[in-house]
Length: 435
Image (cartoon, rainbow, N blue to C red; front, side, top):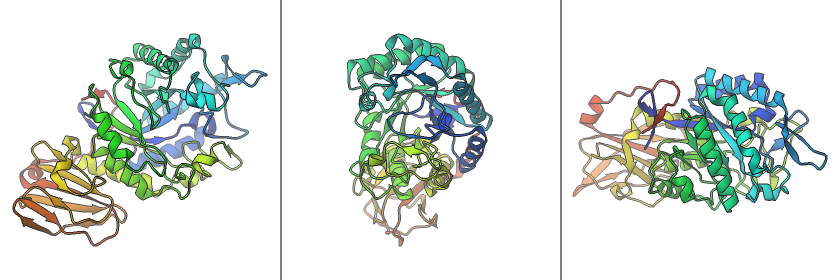
């Protein structure tokens, strides 16, 4: 399943800017959005409230509520300047033709959630305050028809957490029927049955994670969520952030790691799109800011440096390829190839279109006679375009191993399909629904 926009397929490519409302000026926000728009991004993911357990703060960081003398956040004492700025910044997103994707309540604001426990429950919201808060959020942002990401980094580890987010989902959807809804999950999370069966949830969003031992999560999670009994579009909303340490271990994730996670996701069932994150952008790190999760993620880059990481360009190119070749029509099809599991394949139902991602050079065998196909291989580090050599043997097509030590994407189209396909980039109207 995919997103539709004006009745046409839409690829969700969202940069992660969780802490923008707290840490970035409106002037810098304009510059940042212009750069991401140029790269082909279609959406921006932001947390409405600051993430308190895992982020950066400085003297100029804005807070949405005042703190009591005991150090606890007082949700009845609103800082109007914070929310005025948040509305202004969201208006700029829409003005530039991008879609705001807003996390309503990060899990550090929910009692018994792992993040609220980690910081001593200094920011938990009473259940009685949920509806007032959600009403404030929807009143503020509904005019922009955002995607509402109801939860943030959530495990659903207790009945209380499930109840909070179920109530919030229903309330937000009732007040915002034109907005799509989803949940941002911790890698360890499963979507509870009550939420999975809710008619108020529009698509699945998983997080494949940032640990060095989670290399198979992108494709395994895509398969898992695509196989849920209630079928919805699937997005990997948080693959490994470029520049982040490997979950308490260096080295850092590279542009290759980002490409691998994203291509494995979108060819394995998460074809509605992907998020992207750069370690320095998501919290908008500036000189003098203290980052409170060094032990897991490592030192962040200054946001101006992280903005220019290569992985963002790679994902813009991935979106271009996905739309140009209309890969929305494909479905996971591992039985079409003879290759290790980390090489991922998808194909149209009639096999007139095939896509294969190879994270390394490999002599690929495709169980199909492909003499009537136009086959193109794109190397994804140096962006070469190859016309590969094939040999054929009893219905099997054998791709000669590419002569470059980098990852690559194979696109194969039957000649008839290619002659009628129009590689037209979609326009950029607001998201309207799913299909």
